[in-house]
Length: 438
Image (cartoon, rainbow, N blue to C red; front, side, top):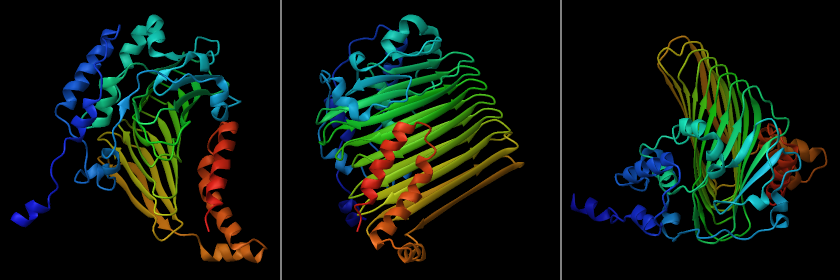
């Protein structure tokens, strides 16, 4: 008994250390925001930073994060358009830019006509307060989620996208979050409201203009009304030393359709937890790709909740890991009592490019209805030697054959991105990374 106690590491208040550097925020002009902050601060009082002893974090150690000190951003860096040009997309309707979590109107472009709102929270409150109060902060549950509570307690602004009833956007909306300051801690927030019968494509993009460590802690809430359609492309291409810990909550209304493609390429440690709740007859496709090298760790958690009958969900998550990289996938599908005629399929496919790379994958089904069709599966493996040999027999070198097969494995996910300029950027990055392997 005594030896076991001696082996237990001393308790360190990592959350308290992080909170110690957070300033007291001035009250928001919006009472609803102040109430949300108060609730989150109360929740933080009962929470602690997760450890490997927590089931949801048993493969993801936050020890590298705890070794560093992060400071909230006091003022945004003064960027010019040419600074963010490498990340701008040619084929979008508009762009909304936040620099280190602070809205940058001089880098943003106006929303398209037709009543579409693409702006920051402080501006949107003036004209859409009722719609925002009905949804803002009501989808992302705090519970035991310390990072969601941190975001809510210290949020100062947010990206807001509102697509009116029966409006179909011809081009995507680009939300661009740029990190520029070493040691910075930011809490980006997004709220997307797609009203009944509307249709839109959203790109949520996290990038960096520096390589030092920083922590970005986003929360995104998405609400699709009945028969709305949203394609949501989420790209995490933070700096190589960054920490990116994100939460997303999506509510899909009756007969609505949510298509999600998530790509993780940056950060030394990243985690994305996505929760999707499906209404009656709703559909979703949740696809993801993690491309990892060196000592990167990427953790993807998802929960697709069939709360009503006749729902359909599809999920394909892929990981490519080389070096000593570590990929984690935990995907849960819940079928609630009464959610009959649910049709769900989930697949986790993982490619290891070195003996030191590691993947932990855990697809899960929780079914509480009897008239359903649900499948799941997972594979972990290396490149097929016969396929490599076949390509070599056709004149390719061994390295070229491995690069081609690795690219093809990941390209299946990238091909699902409906934004040509973004897809091209990501394809080029994947080619550069996979081409560097021996």
